[in-house]
Picture 1 (cartoon, rainbow, N blue to C red):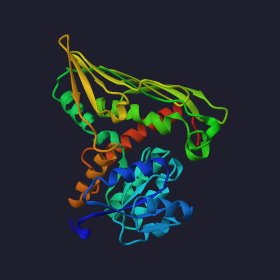
Picture 2 (cartoon, rainbow, N blue to C red):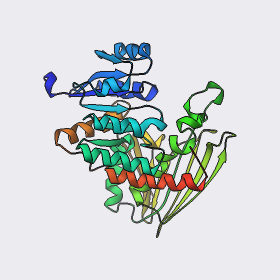
Picture 3 (cartoon, one colour):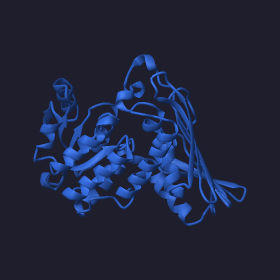
Picture 4 (cartoon, helix red, strand yellow):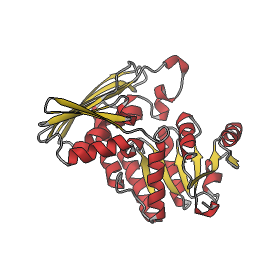
Length: 324
Protein backbone atom coordinates (compact mmCIF):
# COMPACT_ATOMS: atom_id res chain seq x y z
CA UNK A 1 0.00 0.00 0.00
CA UNK A 2 1.42 3.38 -0.97
CA UNK A 3 1.90 6.10 1.60
CA UNK A 4 -0.75 8.33 0.02
CA UNK A 5 -3.37 5.58 0.39
CA UNK A 6 -2.93 5.39 4.14
CA UNK A 7 -5.11 7.21 6.67
CA UNK A 8 -2.77 9.50 8.59
CA UNK A 9 -3.46 9.76 12.31
CA UNK A 10 -2.58 12.33 14.91
CA UNK A 11 -2.90 11.58 18.63
CA UNK A 12 -3.30 14.15 21.42
CA UNK A 13 -3.19 13.25 25.10
CA UNK A 14 -0.45 10.64 25.41
CA UNK A 15 -1.47 8.57 28.42
CA UNK A 16 -2.21 4.88 28.86
CA UNK A 17 -5.15 4.64 26.45
CA UNK A 18 -3.23 6.52 23.75
CA UNK A 19 -0.39 4.00 24.09
CA UNK A 20 -2.78 1.07 23.72
CA UNK A 21 -4.42 2.70 20.71
CA UNK A 22 -1.06 3.38 19.05
CA UNK A 23 -0.04 -0.26 19.49
CA UNK A 24 -3.26 -1.41 17.83
CA UNK A 25 -2.90 1.13 15.02
CA UNK A 26 0.36 -0.59 14.03
CA UNK A 27 -1.69 -3.69 13.12
CA UNK A 28 -3.48 -1.88 10.28
CA UNK A 29 -1.76 -1.68 6.89
CA UNK A 30 -3.77 1.37 5.85
CA UNK A 31 -3.01 3.37 9.02
CA UNK A 32 -0.03 5.62 9.70
CA UNK A 33 0.75 7.46 12.92
CA UNK A 34 1.91 10.79 11.51
CA UNK A 35 1.99 13.15 14.50
CA UNK A 36 1.52 13.20 18.27
CA UNK A 37 1.12 16.10 20.68
CA UNK A 38 1.50 16.73 24.38
CA UNK A 39 1.94 19.93 26.33
CA UNK A 40 5.12 18.25 27.58
CA UNK A 41 7.61 18.20 24.68
CA UNK A 42 9.71 15.38 26.18
CA UNK A 43 6.64 13.21 26.56
CA UNK A 44 5.64 13.86 22.95
CA UNK A 45 9.14 13.08 21.69
CA UNK A 46 9.37 9.84 23.67
CA UNK A 47 5.92 8.72 22.49
CA UNK A 48 6.77 9.49 18.86
CA UNK A 49 10.06 7.57 19.02
CA UNK A 50 8.34 4.60 20.65
CA UNK A 51 5.89 4.24 17.75
CA UNK A 52 8.18 5.35 14.90
CA UNK A 53 6.22 8.58 14.42
CA UNK A 54 8.06 11.40 12.65
CA UNK A 55 6.39 14.42 14.25
CA UNK A 56 6.09 15.39 17.91
CA UNK A 57 4.42 18.67 18.91
CA UNK A 58 4.31 20.48 22.24
CA UNK A 59 0.88 21.96 21.53
CA UNK A 60 -2.39 20.46 20.35
CA UNK A 61 -3.02 23.45 18.07
CA UNK A 62 0.21 22.75 16.15
CA UNK A 63 -0.99 19.22 15.40
CA UNK A 64 -4.40 20.53 14.28
CA UNK A 65 -2.59 22.80 11.80
CA UNK A 66 -0.54 19.95 10.31
CA UNK A 67 -1.99 19.39 6.84
CA UNK A 68 -0.54 15.87 6.75
CA UNK A 69 -2.89 14.69 9.51
CA UNK A 70 -6.24 13.27 8.34
CA UNK A 71 -7.83 12.28 11.65
CA UNK A 72 -7.15 13.19 15.27
CA UNK A 73 -7.60 10.73 18.13
CA UNK A 74 -8.40 12.71 21.28
CA UNK A 75 -7.32 10.89 24.44
CA UNK A 76 -7.02 13.84 26.81
CA UNK A 77 -8.91 14.03 30.15
CA UNK A 78 -12.72 14.16 29.91
CA UNK A 79 -13.07 17.85 30.72
CA UNK A 80 -11.16 18.88 27.56
CA UNK A 81 -12.89 16.62 25.00
CA UNK A 82 -15.51 19.06 23.78
CA UNK A 83 -13.30 22.08 23.16
CA UNK A 84 -10.47 20.10 21.57
CA UNK A 85 -12.78 18.07 19.33
CA UNK A 86 -14.48 21.24 18.09
CA UNK A 87 -11.10 22.92 17.43
CA UNK A 88 -9.91 19.88 15.49
CA UNK A 89 -13.11 19.81 13.39
CA UNK A 90 -12.80 23.55 12.74
CA UNK A 91 -9.25 22.87 11.52
CA UNK A 92 -10.59 20.45 8.93
CA UNK A 93 -9.65 17.25 10.76
CA UNK A 94 -11.75 14.14 11.17
CA UNK A 95 -12.07 13.22 14.87
CA UNK A 96 -12.24 10.09 17.00
CA UNK A 97 -12.88 11.30 20.56
CA UNK A 98 -12.51 9.16 23.64
CA UNK A 99 -15.56 8.44 25.74
CA UNK A 100 -17.32 10.08 27.38
CA UNK A 101 -17.39 12.54 24.52
CA UNK A 102 -18.34 15.37 26.89
CA UNK A 103 -19.22 16.12 30.50
CA UNK A 104 -22.59 17.58 29.52
CA UNK A 105 -25.27 16.87 26.95
CA UNK A 106 -25.05 20.49 25.81
CA UNK A 107 -21.38 20.06 24.89
CA UNK A 108 -22.11 16.78 23.11
CA UNK A 109 -24.63 18.62 20.92
CA UNK A 110 -22.03 21.28 20.10
CA UNK A 111 -19.55 18.60 18.99
CA UNK A 112 -22.05 16.96 16.64
CA UNK A 113 -23.04 20.35 15.24
CA UNK A 114 -19.36 21.11 14.52
CA UNK A 115 -18.99 17.83 12.64
CA UNK A 116 -21.96 18.69 10.44
CA UNK A 117 -20.96 22.31 9.94
CA UNK A 118 -17.44 21.47 8.80
CA UNK A 119 -18.43 18.24 7.02
CA UNK A 120 -15.86 16.15 8.85
CA UNK A 121 -16.17 12.65 10.27
CA UNK A 122 -16.72 12.56 14.01
CA UNK A 123 -17.20 9.54 16.26
CA UNK A 124 -17.15 8.89 19.97
CA UNK A 125 -14.54 6.19 20.59
CA UNK A 126 -16.88 3.55 21.96
CA UNK A 127 -14.62 0.69 20.98
CA UNK A 128 -16.89 -1.92 22.61
CA UNK A 129 -19.49 -1.32 19.89
CA UNK A 130 -17.09 -2.62 17.24
CA UNK A 131 -15.52 -5.72 18.80
CA UNK A 132 -16.59 -9.01 17.16
CA UNK A 133 -18.34 -10.36 20.28
CA UNK A 134 -20.68 -7.38 20.63
CA UNK A 135 -21.34 -7.35 16.88
CA UNK A 136 -22.38 -11.00 16.91
CA UNK A 137 -24.36 -10.83 20.16
CA UNK A 138 -26.40 -7.87 18.88
CA UNK A 139 -27.08 -9.79 15.67
CA UNK A 140 -28.34 -12.83 17.60
CA UNK A 141 -30.48 -10.68 19.88
CA UNK A 142 -32.00 -8.92 16.87
CA UNK A 143 -32.71 -12.32 15.29
CA UNK A 144 -34.72 -13.27 18.39
CA UNK A 145 -32.41 -16.11 19.43
CA UNK A 146 -33.09 -15.47 23.14
CA UNK A 147 -36.58 -14.07 22.58
CA UNK A 148 -37.67 -10.75 24.02
CA UNK A 149 -35.09 -9.18 26.34
CA UNK A 150 -36.39 -8.94 29.89
CA UNK A 151 -33.26 -8.03 31.84
CA UNK A 152 -29.73 -6.72 31.36
CA UNK A 153 -27.17 -6.93 34.14
CA UNK A 154 -23.75 -5.36 33.76
CA UNK A 155 -21.11 -3.86 36.00
CA UNK A 156 -17.77 -2.19 35.51
CA UNK A 157 -15.84 -2.00 38.75
CA UNK A 158 -12.25 -2.07 39.91
CA UNK A 159 -10.28 -0.88 42.92
CA UNK A 160 -8.40 2.33 42.18
CA UNK A 161 -5.61 3.45 44.50
CA UNK A 162 -6.33 7.06 45.39
CA UNK A 163 -2.89 7.49 46.93
CA UNK A 164 -1.32 6.90 43.53
CA UNK A 165 -2.99 10.06 42.24
CA UNK A 166 -4.29 10.45 38.70
CA UNK A 167 -7.42 11.78 37.06
CA UNK A 168 -9.89 9.23 38.49
CA UNK A 169 -10.15 11.13 41.77
CA UNK A 170 -9.70 14.60 40.26
CA UNK A 171 -13.02 16.42 40.07
CA UNK A 172 -11.57 19.11 37.81
CA UNK A 173 -10.78 16.46 35.18
CA UNK A 174 -14.22 14.84 35.29
CA UNK A 175 -13.19 12.05 37.64
CA UNK A 176 -15.41 9.51 39.37
CA UNK A 177 -17.12 6.25 38.47
CA UNK A 178 -19.97 7.49 36.27
CA UNK A 179 -18.04 9.32 33.57
CA UNK A 180 -15.01 7.08 33.53
CA UNK A 181 -16.65 3.65 33.51
CA UNK A 182 -20.38 4.01 34.20
CA UNK A 183 -20.86 4.94 30.55
CA UNK A 184 -20.06 1.33 29.61
CA UNK A 185 -22.99 -0.46 31.26
CA UNK A 186 -25.26 2.40 30.18
CA UNK A 187 -24.01 1.84 26.62
CA UNK A 188 -24.81 -1.88 26.77
CA UNK A 189 -28.36 -1.26 27.94
CA UNK A 190 -28.82 1.36 25.24
CA UNK A 191 -27.62 -0.76 22.30
CA UNK A 192 -29.87 -3.60 23.45
CA UNK A 193 -32.99 -1.76 24.58
CA UNK A 194 -32.72 1.85 23.48
CA UNK A 195 -33.62 4.86 25.61
CA UNK A 196 -35.32 3.90 28.89
CA UNK A 197 -38.62 5.30 30.13
CA UNK A 198 -37.09 6.06 33.52
CA UNK A 199 -33.70 5.98 35.25
CA UNK A 200 -33.14 5.68 39.00
CA UNK A 201 -29.59 6.21 40.26
CA UNK A 202 -27.90 6.27 43.66
CA UNK A 203 -24.26 6.90 44.56
CA UNK A 204 -21.64 6.74 47.27
CA UNK A 205 -19.46 9.85 47.21
CA UNK A 206 -15.91 10.95 47.81
CA UNK A 207 -15.41 13.95 50.11
CA UNK A 208 -14.64 16.09 47.03
CA UNK A 209 -18.06 15.32 45.51
CA UNK A 210 -17.21 12.78 42.81
CA UNK A 211 -19.07 9.46 42.78
CA UNK A 212 -17.05 6.49 43.97
CA UNK A 213 -19.83 4.02 43.26
CA UNK A 214 -23.07 4.40 41.33
CA UNK A 215 -25.94 1.95 40.88
CA UNK A 216 -28.50 2.48 38.14
CA UNK A 217 -31.88 0.91 37.46
CA UNK A 218 -33.24 1.53 33.97
CA UNK A 219 -36.95 0.97 33.43
CA UNK A 220 -38.28 0.01 29.99
CA UNK A 221 -41.77 -0.92 28.88
CA UNK A 222 -41.16 -4.66 29.34
CA UNK A 223 -37.60 -4.90 30.63
CA UNK A 224 -35.19 -3.60 33.25
CA UNK A 225 -31.43 -3.06 33.36
CA UNK A 226 -29.47 -3.29 36.60
CA UNK A 227 -26.12 -1.55 36.18
CA UNK A 228 -23.26 -0.59 38.45
CA UNK A 229 -19.97 1.31 38.26
CA UNK A 230 -17.37 1.58 40.99
CA UNK A 231 -13.76 2.53 41.57
CA UNK A 232 -13.64 1.14 45.12
CA UNK A 233 -14.03 -2.63 44.63
CA UNK A 234 -13.20 -5.38 42.15
CA UNK A 235 -15.98 -7.14 40.21
CA UNK A 236 -16.02 -10.13 37.87
CA UNK A 237 -17.19 -7.79 35.08
CA UNK A 238 -19.49 -10.20 33.31
CA UNK A 239 -22.62 -9.04 31.53
CA UNK A 240 -25.84 -11.03 31.21
CA UNK A 241 -28.62 -10.47 28.69
CA UNK A 242 -31.73 -12.43 29.64
CA UNK A 243 -34.63 -13.08 27.30
CA UNK A 244 -37.80 -15.15 27.63
CA UNK A 245 -36.22 -17.92 25.50
CA UNK A 246 -32.66 -17.95 26.80
CA UNK A 247 -29.75 -15.80 27.94
CA UNK A 248 -26.33 -14.68 26.78
CA UNK A 249 -23.34 -14.12 29.05
CA UNK A 250 -20.43 -12.06 27.72
CA UNK A 251 -16.97 -13.17 28.78
CA UNK A 252 -15.19 -11.13 31.41
CA UNK A 253 -14.26 -8.33 31.08
CA UNK A 254 -17.41 -7.89 29.04
CA UNK A 255 -16.54 -4.48 27.57
CA UNK A 256 -13.74 -6.13 25.58
CA UNK A 257 -15.09 -9.69 25.58
CA UNK A 258 -13.35 -12.32 23.47
CA UNK A 259 -16.46 -14.48 23.28
CA UNK A 260 -19.77 -15.34 24.92
CA UNK A 261 -21.96 -18.22 26.07
CA UNK A 262 -25.52 -18.89 24.92
CA UNK A 263 -27.82 -20.65 27.40
CA UNK A 264 -30.95 -22.05 25.78
CA UNK A 265 -33.18 -25.10 26.10
CA UNK A 266 -31.12 -26.39 29.04
CA UNK A 267 -28.00 -26.39 26.88
CA UNK A 268 -25.04 -24.04 26.74
CA UNK A 269 -22.92 -23.19 23.73
CA UNK A 270 -19.67 -21.24 23.91
CA UNK A 271 -18.42 -18.97 21.14
CA UNK A 272 -14.85 -17.68 20.86
CA UNK A 273 -14.34 -14.37 19.03
CA UNK A 274 -10.83 -13.00 19.66
CA UNK A 275 -10.21 -9.30 19.15
CA UNK A 276 -7.55 -7.97 16.83
CA UNK A 277 -4.90 -6.62 19.18
CA UNK A 278 -6.32 -5.13 22.35
CA UNK A 279 -9.51 -4.29 20.45
CA UNK A 280 -9.04 -0.64 19.48
CA UNK A 281 -8.29 -1.78 15.93
CA UNK A 282 -11.97 -2.43 15.26
CA UNK A 283 -13.04 1.17 15.89
CA UNK A 284 -10.07 2.42 13.85
CA UNK A 285 -11.18 0.22 10.94
CA UNK A 286 -14.66 1.75 11.18
CA UNK A 287 -13.13 5.25 11.06
CA UNK A 288 -11.17 4.32 7.93
CA UNK A 289 -14.23 2.88 6.20
CA UNK A 290 -16.32 5.96 6.95
CA UNK A 291 -13.63 8.41 5.84
CA UNK A 292 -13.01 6.50 2.60
CA UNK A 293 -16.76 6.55 1.90
CA UNK A 294 -17.10 10.27 2.70
CA UNK A 295 -19.35 9.63 5.72
CA UNK A 296 -19.28 12.09 8.63
CA UNK A 297 -20.69 9.52 11.02
CA UNK A 298 -20.75 5.77 11.58
CA UNK A 299 -23.89 3.76 10.98
CA UNK A 300 -22.90 1.45 13.85
CA UNK A 301 -22.28 4.23 16.39
CA UNK A 302 -23.89 7.34 14.97
CA UNK A 303 -24.02 10.93 16.16
CA UNK A 304 -27.54 10.27 17.45
CA UNK A 305 -26.39 7.17 19.33
CA UNK A 306 -23.76 9.24 21.12
CA UNK A 307 -26.27 12.00 21.88
CA UNK A 308 -28.76 9.47 23.26
CA UNK A 309 -26.13 7.97 25.52
CA UNK A 310 -25.03 11.44 26.61
CA UNK A 311 -28.63 12.23 27.51
CA UNK A 312 -28.79 9.08 29.68
CA UNK A 313 -25.53 9.99 31.42
CA UNK A 314 -26.83 13.53 31.97
CA UNK A 315 -29.94 12.14 33.67
CA UNK A 316 -27.81 10.05 36.03
CA UNK A 317 -25.50 13.00 36.68
CA UNK A 318 -28.46 15.16 37.71
CA UNK A 319 -29.96 12.45 39.91
CA UNK A 320 -26.74 11.89 41.83
CA UNK A 321 -26.12 15.66 42.00
CA UNK A 322 -22.75 15.48 40.29
CA UNK A 323 -21.51 18.95 39.45
CA UNK A 324 -18.30 19.61 37.52
